[in-house]
Length: 371
Ligand code: RAM
Image (tube, rainbow, N blue to C red):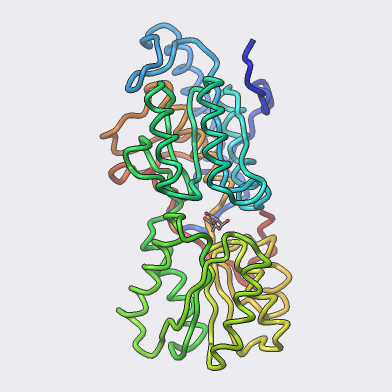
């Protein structure tokens, strides 16, 4: 019997969502052609799995697919399991696991904690999972454990936030770092009529995604908005309360501040609460990467003007699809595209499988989204 806790019943009814076009708003509905694509994808997956049972090489050493015919276990590591962003990724991951007939294990630190992430990976190596998909709180810190997993034959991908490149096979990236940084800066500049000082809240200093996004915000500002200046940036370590207190301090230290940008989802409601409590609603604009559900209230009150994000369920879905394909030998370095079940086909840029462009939610459309 598989010793690993299975969180997902493989026989659950299949539910498919339409393919997400790059740059198109995340869609919740279903179309006839999407259903057709979905059925075909499911049939192809079934055929691939059946074929795999007859022809795949056995063994699990690094570089070879896992034992043929075996039910796979895929482990999904969030930065923290209490973060609604990763809960939403998990929902999509469960859907992919159901469709693929794999067991999904979801575990992570309760709060962001890189040491705890390492412990969990070590545990998964001992348990013998087939693949790990990790969102890395500390890029360098987790890489040793992920390399060890690979050496033991576990297939490793990262999603959301990358490790060092040699610690994983692919990075399932939500959008290009430049696309995200520029989208945040462009939206912030638009809200301030391209004038004034702004500050940035990031997650942790060691998270690759956060630091890269902040760098692109700065690059975009220098290239396109001479009237704007980043006067400060602070980490909040993915705690909403810390983001709020950092923003409260920034608001009094920089009385001319016109804009707060948060690159972490926890920071956006934190920044909004600080602005609201300081009585600066409308005077200091708030924009960031946030979930519609966590920001709806502030968007409706006019504290936060817009939040930007990708469809987080799709990110979890894509991560599990990629981990499964890698474990079955159906995805290899050098591939130029990847078919991810009901979501359709994605480009592979180098070793990045890219989900698509971020989307902007504002008071006119935020009620259409429930994640
Ligand atoms: C936080 C995390 C995550 C990031 C989102 C936008 O939840 O830091 O890595 O992608 O924000």
